[in-house]
Length: 124
Image (cartoon, one colour):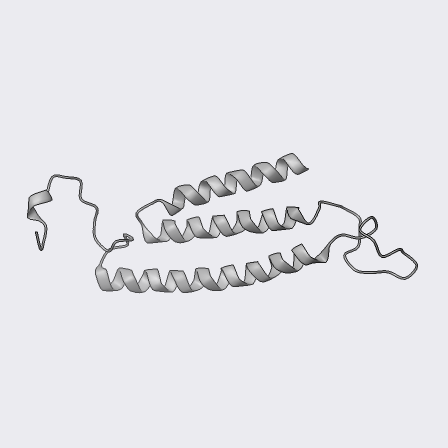
């Protein structure tokens, strides 16, 4: 289970970094989303992977970590999911507005120069 979770965190991080380095706005937003997924899995796995254990206290059971899972990482991940969703929505709205204003969806608001038109740029 730990190997699968570590592999998933690594794959999500690699995809997120790859997309974050792209020139298009939507790819960057998607990359940030994948990185937030990887971070959520990392926080969740830090709370010890245990199945069949309750996250809340029960009567008649000793209050130690041998009988319960840690509820703090679960609460942190739930909060992070809500915040990441809100930030993704705001980023998408800003990307749509930037595309309508600049007529381009590149991060730097213009098409990348491939070297053929180096002398024909505006302001040069």
